[in-house]
Length: 354
Ligand SMILES: Nc1nc2c(ncn2[C@@H]2O[C@H](COP(=O)(O)OP(=O)(O)O)[C@@H](O)[C@H]2O)c(=O)[nH]1
Ligand SMILES: [Mg+2]
Image (cartoon, rainbow, N blue to C red; front, side, top):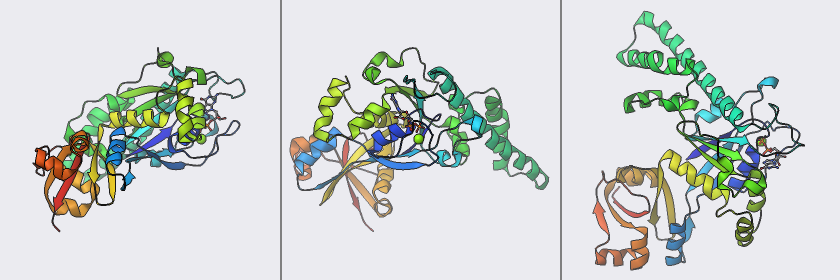
């Protein structure tokens, strides 16, 4: 899974990126950076920790989420978003400035999260509009040679539903589309259709306050979360043993790396399953509703190709029983076929033949 971090300059994007990925990219008080940062956040998972206690000698490989921090937009200076990069993302994280700092000028004047949420929302809509318009022009030109049935359907979708929504400045997220139409649009990477997490970058003393997001509505199809990016950045630099106290002091249960990643999982409908190998235990990420065959492909294409059966148990059944053979004896290890929908927290052992 990869999430793109976007927002206005100096909203705290890079500070959040650093907190999430334990990186040390430069954040700037005076000048917004022009570089794109790429990093990986480890998905912390108590279930995996439980399994690692059981298999103490094996390496533990947690699931990962990739974050891409793109430079901010400042239309006044003729800057635009690095759209090509964002179009490849599974979802977006919009960092919105909600912290006060008299020394730090806001590119649009005062601090006003509602205005910024709307402004970035509109940027994404405009970017999508350009893409759709260009595609429709190309289809219009191709009419001379005659359109294929697929192209006709695509044109109808774009001109009857997508373009009018964008013209009305509506995010494509709000449209109810059939799975087939959804597929038709996939190649465009339309930004206003992507699942989006709005991260309200609040003052340090509001970080643990659930009321911090009060009064600010998440646009339809998005979720909103309050985080203090600079505080979280500091916490991420502490030794893990010291992080707990610091978090408790700030009134935070979990570091942002955990909260943001979890919200991303929920937003994208992702779940984790686990594999226990001879030398490593590992967490994998799949979409909810994925079949055992698809899950096998996530681990390795050979396993997908030679798939025979999946042996499945729940993580706590495995911890309870102490080993997979013990689960088998107890009858808590089930045999499932290709079409089985893997559930969150299951331990899966694939039988395959290549
Ligand atoms: N007071 C305060 N300052 C912050 C917070 N988050 C970021 N900053 C500061 O805002 C400035 C811009 O942050 P940066 O992450 O570079 O913003 P970006 O341009 O969106 O990547 C830096 O000086 C940060 O230290 C925050 O939560 N509170
Ligand atoms: Mg930055």
